[in-house]
Image (cartoon, rainbow, N blue to C red; front, side, top):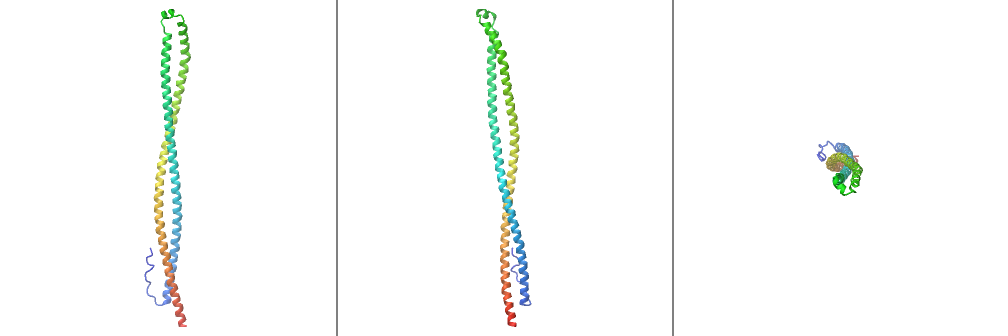
Length: 227
């Protein structure tokens, strides 16, 4: 504001006194204007730096959102992989059960059937040999699939932890962004207000300088007239 700038100075004893008062006021106004000008410069600097923080915050928030989305995609793909593995394990179990059942039937054929069909003992022996070879290999495959599922579960747990951390970071960055946005608005308003004050102060300085100039000219003329 420019309170007091246009207030009438006390009636001077002489024109010279009035000029002296005006010059004192002019010096004060100039000093106030310089001080305000520095404040405006400082506010402008702060505003620029706050806007830069806001841009950085926005970039970080976007990157964090992307990372979170990427982790969620990985978890989804992992779930699909795990489902396929579990399905494969179930099929293997069913096939193994059917095979063992068939081999057991062959092995347990009653002797009278074997007498009627001389090739059956050979088949029975083959069935026994087959079981001794197939079962361990199927067991090994089941064990391998189980390990894979466990590894997938572990990877999922790790990703889930990362996802939670990324979610926390994303929330935190959103809050920081909101704060930076508020601060920018606040500083913009303060900067505009200070700029307005500075313009008023500059106008006041010009007016007083003009009054002082006119009075100086008058005093000079009076002095000339007296001489």
